Image 1 (spheres, rainbow, N blue to C red):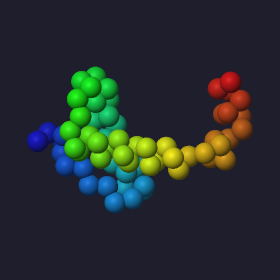
Image 2: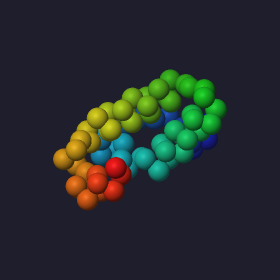
Image 3: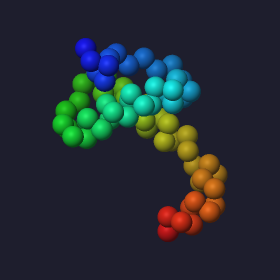
Image 4: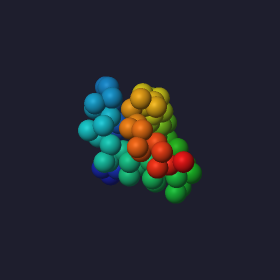
Length: 68
């Protein structure tokens, strides 16, 4: 099993963040191949949880206005 396809074990948001450099590569591969394993589904589950934690209060107002 390659490092990119290694078993995913995530215990919390901090753990996910620390593993993100490797997990990001795996997510990019999912986009390219459009094929998903159970490990890939776990990665997407955590990505969704992480994005759900971010809201308007987490984005500085100057950043938000730059995107409009």
